[in-house]
Length: 386
Image 1 (tube, helix red, strand yellow):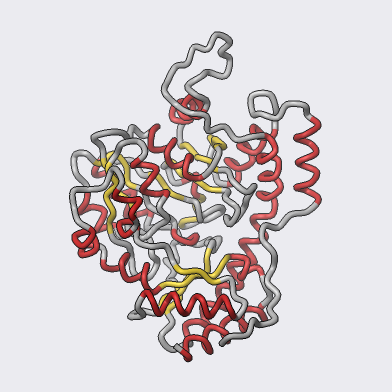
Image 2 (cartoon, rainbow, N blue to C red):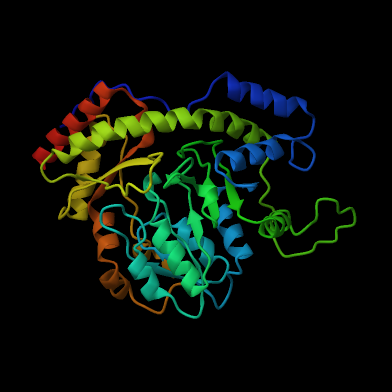
């Protein structure tokens, strides 16, 4: 397939008068940083309430959200953090930048989320955090992980960069008793171009995070009495004003994506060789950050060729994340004392998914039912030509 199809996908990011009004509101308040303005404070309150938490801290981006959360949990030199082998590289780099060792473990072949048994096998006396990644909005097995974390005395940090508005058995991300980090990068489910947030289950952790995200300086300090080590991870007022408008759009967009994925996944499952991402029904609200599917047995080169053909046909298609241990960046600092092949041998699902998986941008799922049929038809025709 070489000619681009006449398809109408919704634009992303989406914006309107609410974002414009918010930017003007932030501009005219006369204070453009969080210590003098009100937009960040209001966004944190609204975001926390939406996710069932009492404590939200807005930060500069999703990677900083993970780094700050890990620091609050005590991660640093001499400690280890368990992460899924199949994830975006920030999941590992946030720990590695703190001087910790990142330990990749395998994922479930259907949901692409961290495997509980593999996680249990990787725990040592140096493990300081377990980081489940809610891949494409599908929540990890939070029941199994919570039981494991309690038994091992190791806290969970939910990487919820894909999971704005997600629920696990009726409970929101902030109601699960663990820290959760979000991203508002340009492609995310709600965005200000960049930005992030961390939810905390208790006031003590929140207050420590606030200090560390503001160079260790208390809110009322007038004499530069910095209390802790930290950095400047403060979100600005303009980004917060946009995010308040984006949050107001989120619920309806999730409803639409849930409906469209039920159509598209059913159509994809009918295509010979195509296996859409599975769903753990305990995750009873999935915001669908990506529409993901696999072609098991397909080589990475053929998968990349497929993606190129789908893009040429007009689909917003991408190759899946590369397994983190197959990235040069992973080995620069804080890697376990293993080889690539040794990690790959214990992460066969991560290795396979990173080679044979394709994802479509979530704006695809904001389209019409008719568009879902068009998308599936293009994928079916393209796969048949491989």
